[in-house]
Image (cartoon, rainbow, N blue to C red; front, side, top):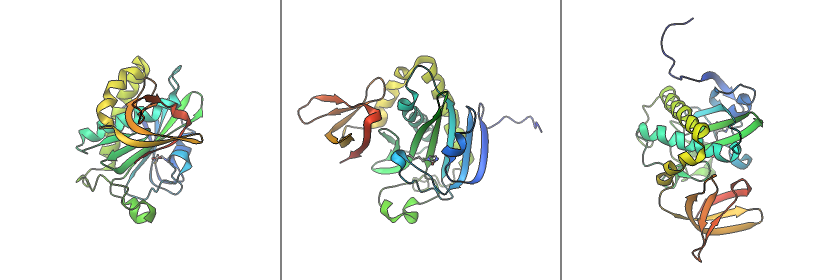
Amino acid sequence: MNTGAASPFPGWTIIDVDHASSTNDLAAREAPWTVVRARRQSAGRGRQNRAWVSSEGGLWLSAVLPSPPPEPAAATAPLVVGLAAARALDGLGARPLRLRWPNDLMVDDKKLGGILAERPAPDRVVVGLGINVLNDPERDDASLVGQTTSLARLGLAGLSLGDLSAAILDALYRTHAVWVGRGFLALLPDFEALWGPPRPVCVTVDQTTVSGRFLGIDAVGNPRIETASGAVQVIYGPRVWQLIET
Ligand code: BTN
């Protein structure tokens, strides 16, 4: 039935489920511009197949985006989603927020959320986004104690998951339009302030580790690291196993 009311999610088709193993798996079967949201996930996963604790109260959603040829979408997609989520969260008053390359939403040194981009078919990319809201991952997994935060802890316990989703999907729709219309380069300046001041990091690539200060990203999203000698090393992002702030 068409009630005549404007959708709070213009441009998107929303599929809500009570429970999913992983919303990324459900979204992988859907067409571009579909979003799958679950109240909880039993096998949520993060980058490098790490477990992602997803009990009720958090935002667990996966959006299907059309891959923008010819850009290497898998490499820049999590960054684009991170930028969109950061814009939306800032608009909702979640501060101080920063990004940690490649896929973490951070408040100081605590993780508020993460992004997992996967490419189930050449023509689309699934971007999964998890944000701690009323849930407490540290209660579910003791190994996370001291490492996470939530919107509730930032004073936003009253924010509904519906309003949060709407703000994020609106920002993602707009940011995606710039990404495909003008290219990743057009978004680059917007990232600068989001990385925060250069932080000491250790980057594991293949069998080696590069230590230095994280300066930001290059034109295609690769991390730029200033080593102790003062040289700036650009590390090929898809080969990075992990980046740890030290
Ligand atoms: C990370 O920080 O490594 C990424 C975490 C991504 C979690 C989200 S929750 C919704 C979607 N479904 C998943 O299984 N993972 C992503």
